[in-house]
Length: 158
Image 1 (cartoon, rainbow, N blue to C red):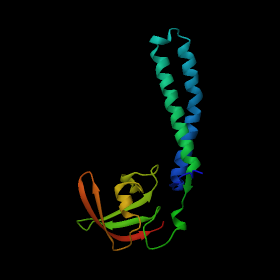
Image 2 (image 1 turned 180 degrees about the vertical axis):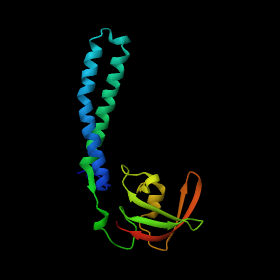
Image 3 (image 1 turned 30 degrees about the horizontal axis):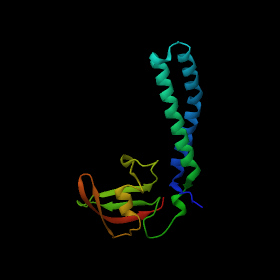
Image 4 (image 1 turned 90 degrees about the vertical axis):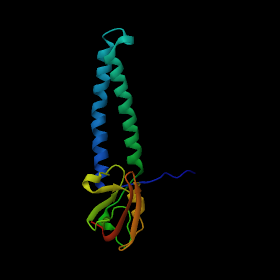
């Protein structure tokens, strides 16, 4: 029997997905109306409005299906319920970069990842390199700009 791969995410990511799903389900009937209106204009072979509406309908249906799949496999994790001395999903990690400048990231799911906000995916190169590390561990990661080195200075579950 095939097992369903769980998709870890924080509560914030789960909320963002449910809000996007609700928005798309509201847009869905509007697209059907747009298709009907475009169909009423006659010849469909040269009807750009019809083809655009049909394309948008396909995009919406695919996105709805994808979001419903993610939500069905979601494993919502609250970092405040975690503890330990190793970096795991949900941990907030403070590191020192090569210039001894502090860099702080939270390890999150793909949905929530936004490096500008200090949130990196557990699947990103840095996220994968950090998982399992402890304070005072050195981390080496290859990124598009080259090799980067960090020293883990603090692990928090907030």
